[in-house]
Amino acid sequence: MSNLLVEIKRTNQKVRFEGVSVDNPDITIPFDFAPPYGDGRGFGGPELLLMSFAGCVSTAIVFLLNETGKHITSYSAKFEGVRVEKPLSLSTIKFHISVVSEDLTNEDVEGVIKAAADLSPVWLAVKNNVAVETSYEISR
Image (tube, rainbow, N blue to C red; front, side, top):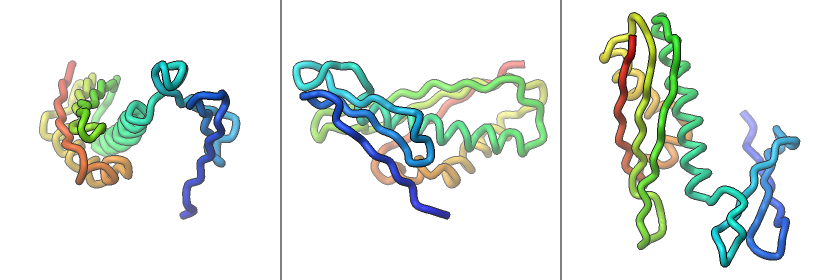
């Protein structure tokens, strides 16, 4: 398994950057900060961390849900990062999963969330620094 490599480039005279991954050089991600330091025309670091967490955790959860052999019609999730000022950081990540399935049980979802905590690389990276609160709903 090779290491990950990303590059960022400053694109204005303030703090706006564009980032690319060596594996996906044609997809750029804009970084910026709110005025007056930046122009507010991109994502901030905590926002990108939350997005990375959301994508990585959801990938793990959907993979694990599919492994249950149950029929998953739909999956969506909302993630919230609780910010603190001193030190400027995220103290908690809260996420709520919504799954549509005719045969999925509460035990299935709870087991998958627990397994995702030990499988998702981003969750593993933040788990000793950020509290994670989960909730879910199953619709038929």
